[in-house]
Length: 188
Image (cartoon, rainbow, N blue to C red; front, side, top):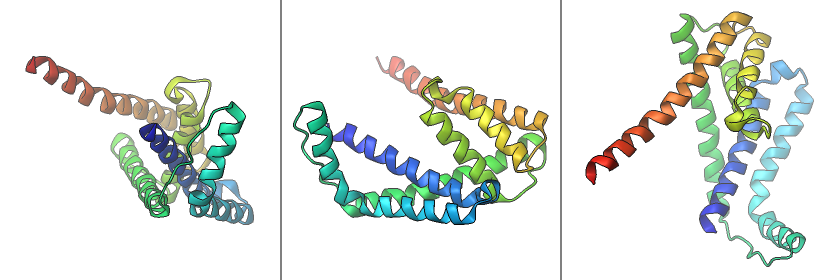
């Protein structure tokens, strides 16, 4: 229960932080600086107040489902540390994505902030998509569309980057697990 609860909290913090990062780095795409500022402030307030509202939220969910849910005791510093770590992770993913584009296309025009916004936005939309396993199709379409919209690539190059990024992420996820499984078989 603790591991599942921790996972849910971490994913929620990661999604909230990623959303704030997209709003800040993609403000040019959104074209509404006041709305972006208000949304980011709301997300920051949500993260800062999370330790206070999680216990009542757990009790409320428990009353909805007719079960007694023990309110989580989550130290505020844990949530805030996770938020900072998550923010840095999203920024580094954006840097890695810009380097990936440069390696694939030979150049990566545009600002770093645009690459952070594109990658993070596409990842989050793919992650929360209820219609596609692992965001398949959703993430690629979003990635390509945002790249074109922000002037990072033309349509053909954006499609190539989106497909190559999916293949690369799949390889990076499968190869280590395959090696681990193979190593386990050899130990027996």
